[in-house]
Length: 75
Image (tube, rainbow, N blue to C red; front, side, top):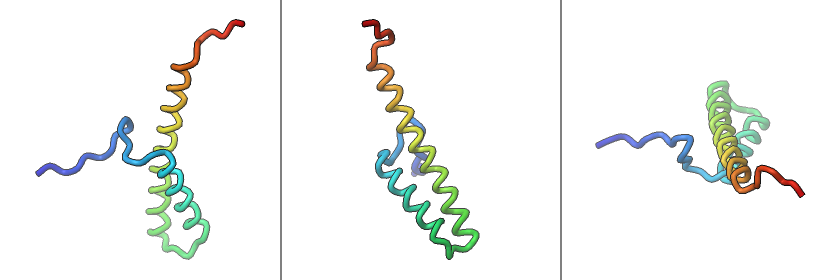
């Protein structure tokens, strides 16, 4: 039996909205404090992953907009 593959940059497992909401939750938990150092580091690492996923979605959206927009807009 093979192990599940990690999501690639091309095939994220969360939508932008899901990743953004989870990232906001991570930030709230870190700002609230009261965590151990290990818990804080784990949350920070998850936040970095989520931020990268959000960047991925935004980059894809920019690419799609650029492809849909005429290059020269003379008028």
